[in-house]
Length: 443
Image 1: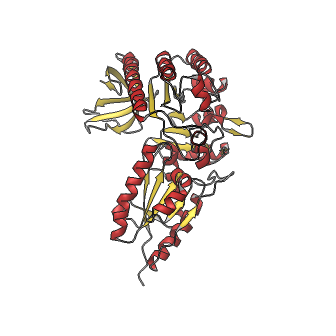
Image 2: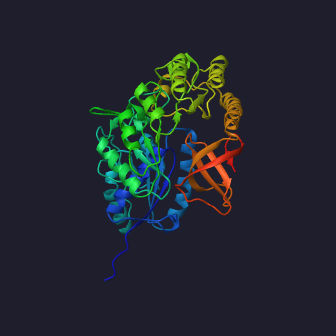
Image 3: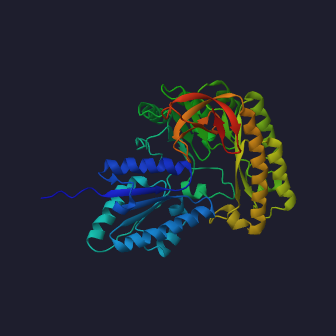
């Protein structure tokens, strides 16, 4: 009797680094139960879409993607699963309006996927669809004991905590990922050692509010130092922190430990105190500036990046100019700048009108992007004539004749490979001879 081949799964990941990390957990758990994975969705028995719910653009991309899968499912048997934040936040809409979706699983329910998928495949063979939903949020799930199934590369994502307790009024994360839970330091360090043994040279510690990590007498400063001490690891990064949780011990760890990268992504969101208050950000513009001043006094070489939202509910022209002035005063090395996008079930959606016209939001984004592009170019030009250490990642995006890597501050560097291409994971030194607003160019 011919043994039936194991089901093949194709997983596609949208959104943040946390989703990348979650997809690695999903692969690990499904492989343990006999599932195999394929990079070709045309050959897959199961297609899983790991989704993001942060902005409207992410939703639109995923709905367009589901439309493509609908055509594929009309041609042959196929189980389609939607995972992650969008599955959690829009469960009723997806269940009612997307009949092609067989499985919905939220971020805390991935241990149930082997059972849900096996049942869906079994019933499909019998000629009918059995939908499976697992959408309960957990106060305890941190996926302890699951080592991620990582793609090869230079960087390993390690999630140190899940969920968020901040309840910023614009953000859907507390409703899609639940409350904060920190993993044990032993589990994090086991994962770090495993990543080093597999040849990864950089670790990025993840959390929705990573610097609020707490486990018994461990805080985030103690944890990141311990991870940075892992043999075989050249660099350690982290994202994303909240300005309210930045104790001196963490700043000192970044300043003094040679393996911890001199880069902090510090979300600002807005420069107006009234708007920050409506956003429930719990700090003022003055507080933020004082933190930046302290960080730069302790770590003069720090690379600072940020997130900014334009056109939040009731934001006036003058309040937007407050943000503009903050950007010019702080001189960020780079910034992610977005239009406000109302999310269902958030505090802002319940309490405030999304009343800034879309064209005004777009104009404000364009203004800030141009200001930040100029600032980034000026700051990048400071590296011209300097030698910088680069962790090689591979070929440049636009040319296989060029190598690409990142500085300690996470700035992209490209160079002509010539006769010495350097292997990914190698730390090399390059002298910078030119700079753009996006890239440094090494000799």
